[in-house]
Length: 409
Image (cartoon, rainbow, N blue to C red; front, side):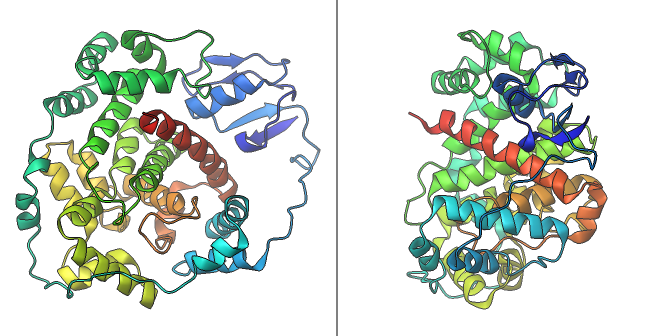
């Protein structure tokens, strides 16, 4: 008997003890064989491990020998992780996982092409330090007037007394939003035995906070659907952002920090400042991206050098304008500098989630390198590299499922 992480569980393994959610709900009783449905349920409810009988005395199941990687994928991993010390256990595990994932999704020629010099197109001169964030947001009039449903959803998320019926009533006002959420909860990932055809039932089963957070995310996504594809591929951007939110939620659960759905929203919106820049100041952001790529420097540090603020500051200013909870605004502001936050242990969750989310997908979403990990923030979480990789595997699957439901129109 012994504990195995969720990514190492296999159908047919026998449970040594009850498999339960963090709230105590029994997914499967001890003595029963694991099913695909039970493993999916674990991923949905943030269960990271199970006590099974098929574990050796050393505490781990026999590992399969990892296949050797072709040189282009190793080079791509070295390049993408150049801002990090891959001797650190977490970064070493992420870099290895990245290289393996790249070998599954890319050809060696594609990997080589991603190492080619960066060309930024028409770049504007480096902006002055005195460029005012307020002026940029003021020029983005559309962002100041989000649909009223956004504010209703935001208030419902902040109100612990919001009932399933109340949340369902709000969401039902938007036909497209309702359809996407129902499509999501009826995916095989959630694994419900019968079709869920009403919002009230969806909210009751999935959970008020989780569905409200997803609804908020969809509403924000629709506000940036006019960014040209030659600037950034929006599905890649949102896949990384959704995965970051999922990672933050799962990390909060694993580290027993309350308010996991707030972390989902914070992770989802952590890079919203970059979208503002891509839409209103594309020349500015292209110039900084080119410098970051050519010089091998963190994007947010170059932004601070060029403008006196970074995309985290701009995103936080936008969220304040939108009247989102201070917690989310504060998380977005400090996702690159968690030790400066009022509660560093909370900011550490979003920071580690952001770093890990950039390490998952071989194709970057406009950020040339995996951002540097704050080892102090990592230590605050008190988890192992194996813990992180269990969570990463869950988050990747959840993120891809959410995106398929959001964008499959």
